[in-house]
Image (cartoon, rainbow, N blue to C red; front, side, top):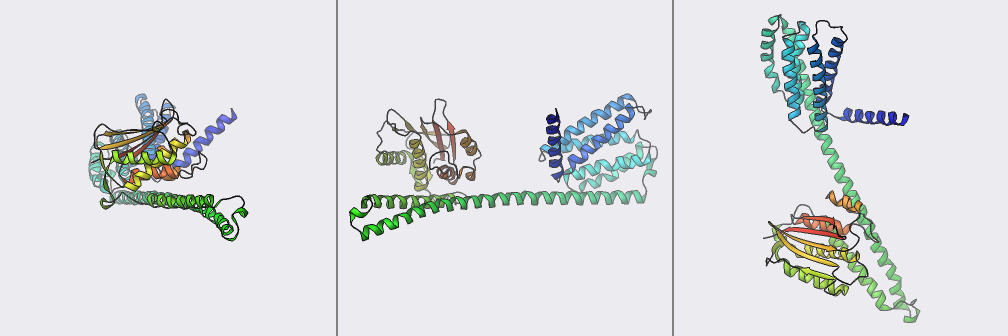
Length: 423
């Protein structure tokens, strides 16, 4: 029981901290008015205000609950306009009704100013001050004291109060904007630092590989072949070529990932998607020694499907998707393991690549759903994985004003769909 109360207290304390950090005072003031309404109703219910009818007491409690709800909506959804106007309209109506009931002159002066103050707070503008003469006229007509409610001192004080509240509300709005901009800038800086650290790590790994090959070639040049620790010259050359190719590919990926906006018209070519896919499939089959059943291509019946895109970027993205599918189906060449399909959907050409592997891990799908490249960088769900390929696919889609989706199939395996605008 103690833990329950402790958790409840902690949750209320956290909520209080979040509320205190809000620069918009409208929820606070709405809840304060609601508490005041509860206090007035409690006084009447306790019999301390014998003149208050029972109906008015329950109206006080109902108004309090209503204001608590509106304040909570404003707090949770600060961009919504309708709860703000409901607060203003509700309090304006309540104050006008109270003016005809409350005989206390000081209370009547307060009732005139409350609607205007709430409107200034809700809008952050000064224009509600023009309604002050109208409220003065209404108060003079419905209140027994008439125009004696207002004297020059009261009017000047109210005007100063309105100006002060407007200034505070404007300052809060500017502070909120500065806070949002600072938060966005901080996130960008954090993403940039994460991006730089990621590539520093990758480049350091490739550099270490090249440094390790230097003494091997030194031994080849200085010693006889039999003295080279059983490493043949072809093996050393292949290792050097592989490392160099990986480094070149990493540099190309870096250039793609660091591009902003979308590709310009001069960077795009008219591509026949069927020819491009067939070329990619042939290259992958040759490099991985795959039979046609292991990697099958199904083209769209509508021919030709033309797109505007960058040949290098799209090829690199599709080869990356296929490579991921191949790695998800290791050591298997029986039956149709990986399939490529091309179809059209409105103004988009959709290339879908599916496999029969283990599918995407749940955590990775959650990261991919954010559609943020930094979320997938550094992913190590597979041996040697770093998330760079997934980030590359997302960036290629973004550069072409397309989209990419990652999902697991019901029958097993993963499915990646790249949608590109077609001509």
